[in-house]
Length: 94
Image 1 (cartoon, rainbow, N blue to C red):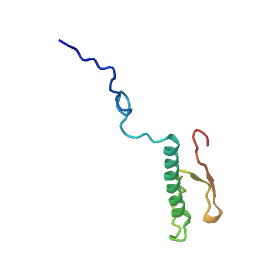
Image 2 (image 1 turned 180 degrees about the vertical axis):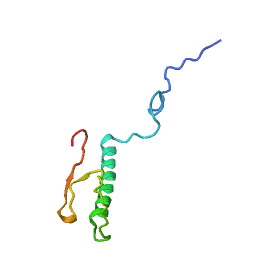
Image 3 (image 1 turned 90 degrees about the vertical axis):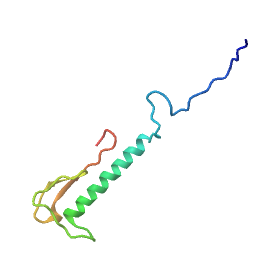
Image 4 (image 1 turned 90 degrees about the horizontal axis):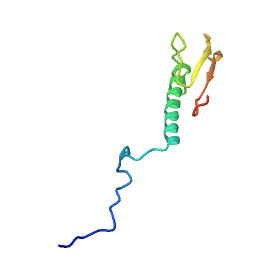
């Protein structure tokens, strides 16, 4: 009776294994960039709604509402005299 012994062994694919996802991982910078662009787009839409743009007329709410990236600091009846504070968080810093 003979035995066959294999000296090479099968290596599992990199994505297979305990704790690993089969989905391709997105780099941290790419995730942060996509999130920042998404929030910036929302802030621009909010500003266009409050102050108007070439496509739409200004339609401010009676009370100044905070947006994702900007806040009205000194509200005024004349929208062009209002003071806004703009802050974008990058990583852990503002």
